[in-house]
Length: 304
Image (cartoon, rainbow, N blue to C red; front, side, top):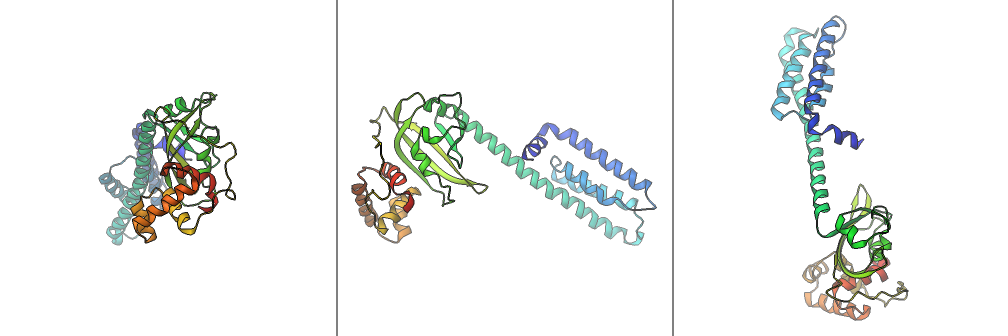
């Protein structure tokens, strides 16, 4: 259905659609005239008005409304004394319907144009960008991402993100939890068997109620050694226990908040947040916020 609407909104269809609308108005007027003694068909003018609404400028909706109201009244059997009032209300109805449908089409067209610009921006970006669906499969990836991850096949689309970035699989929120954004340093497992250190900025979101994830991946293997991942990562039960304050701070770190923002949210001082963060570093054995995000997703996901 959406594809039909998208094809219909193509500006190349403007002249054919407007011509079809004009023909429909003429046919309705002719049929209405021929059936004069029986029934009025003025309400049918709504259909060509709605059809032309995708391409008519706003002022023309009023003119078309006046034309259709005039035609409807010309072949009406109603009392001529109330003609002026009926003309006004019919014009308002026809023009209002056209303007309403026009705004719906206009918003949809703007949405499609925005999506096209965004797609073009993603495809031409030198940064590796991927999108992951609710099943953990890559739904979209640009050329830079394909070159970085080096999949076995020609495309990344449909391949599980866990094969390349297991940490992002942990970040998905299939239970419909609150979206969050964060960054982390971790290993990327390429399709050719190589591994390299990377910085990952990612954000979870929902689309029509379905969880999604978008990520930007940067190769930092030349800047520092690749992260060492345990072959048997700690489970929640094996990980060091955290108190309520530490869990609250960790949750807000995953949302991408700064120390001052976390302090404001928890109604504590920034120094208290800094102290709690230092405790988390010691407990989890990491040195920075990027690493603690990865650890949080691996070990404390059920608490967050």
